[in-house]
Image (cartoon, rainbow, N blue to C red; front, top):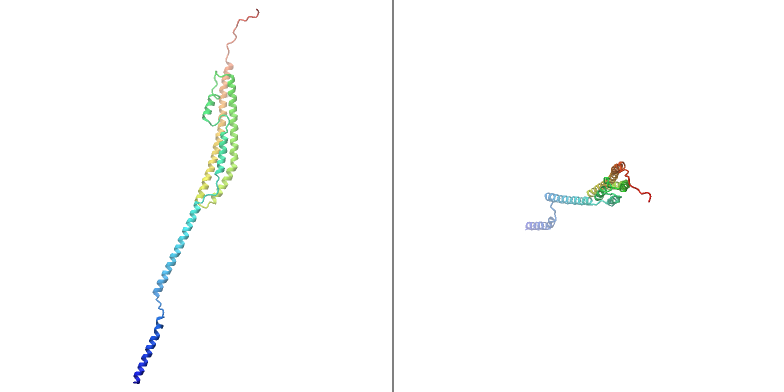
Length: 244
């Protein structure tokens, strides 16, 4: 009987210990290495994707910055100065005296003032034509000198503009600024070629007028020499009544 009581007591104690230990066994944390490795790998991959996105955004931002630089316009423009230089040269050519750069006017002059001297032209007309030709030659020489002086005056402006354009080209931040600087340098060269063309035209005009004057003077000299050497009708006797 005592033995049975002892067994029952031991059973009760064992049940009590088991029941009392259940909450303790439920609070234990089980570590799974495979699951932990997968979680770490997933986190690393996620972090790499975020880094890749950040780098991509940085590249896109830099690309936009470069595009903005390439589309930026040149802050310097020499167009106004170049146009003013060409305008001064054009105005000077338009002020050419007497026989200017007009085909109809030239044709009229060579059909009258520079025409061949003939016996039908009076001595007074020959003298007037010679005087007009000399005045034309002098006017052409004066216009040529004025054109040359204007072009020489443009050299200082061209030097200043060229220096500014080269400086702007070297400091260009994008393709558009470099292209615009190059275009303005080409415009400067075009303006210089226009000045050179004006000088050549004015100088050639003066030379041609002088050559035409010499040719017409030679022709007129031959006509005047012919008139001087031509014998007249001579003396013809006539009846004269002297006394009433």
